[in-house]
Image 1 (cartoon, helix red, strand yellow):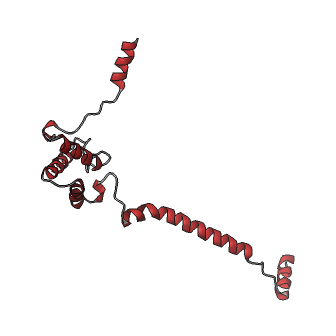
Image 2 (image 1 turned 30 degrees about the horizontal axis):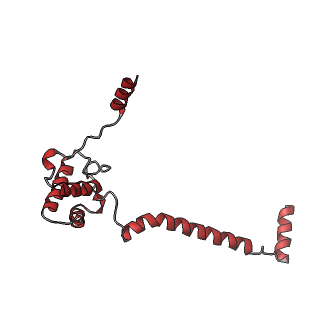
Image 3 (image 1 turned 135 degrees about the vertical axis):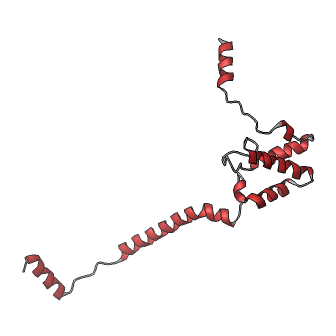
Length: 150
């Protein structure tokens, strides 16, 4: 029974196929670890919801090679990310950097809801505060005639 359960567990467990090809792996384990960390932060422009570390797309492979080349040439992690962002834009980052654009993007819906609540509150208060206008004697007489059908 245990063997059956173990076999089913192994067969039904998703096994991640790493997209990094053996010819891409760097000889220095520290540089390879940095490259894998950076690759996990970059979006595959073909797959869009995968990192380049997980993607089998040709563009993702090219980006992995570029990341490794930049690291071998002595760039810091931040310099490598800046280089890739300069070529592909902020969209290439799986976790966008905090900037005015991202603040506007994430803050605009909350600001619009807040403005709507303020407008609704002020409008409701004005309606409650305004006294109802009294009709003049002429208006009351005219209204009475209209209601009586004259």
